[in-house]
Length: 120
Image 1 (cartoon, rainbow, N blue to C red):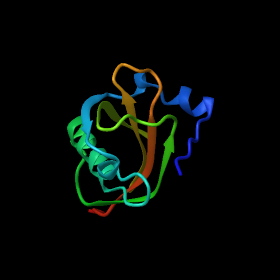
Image 2: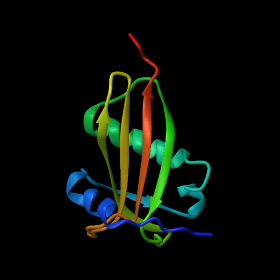
Image 3: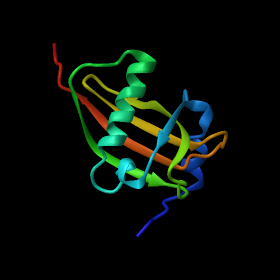
Image 4: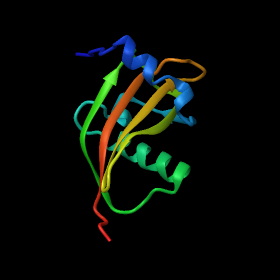
């Protein structure tokens, strides 16, 4: 079953203006893998972080969650971006926003804790 978790506060807090959006293509629900295996979302988050801030190094994702606001039309073209909502010494809470092209409100938000494994 497909569940929508829309709250007006969350949608207004994470509008497209806070993200540096880049165009992406998603071929299928299988590629999106947003049920239990989220490797596409993690890889997309990594790619966007590397492109924006040169953030790299060894890390893990933990405590991730997907919030759906509408059903994306797949296959399709989208815009995606990442923001850091909380930064600590060796971890950060990140939010990946997925938007239909030119639309103000997100289709989906992917929230994850990124834990650095490089303690040097």
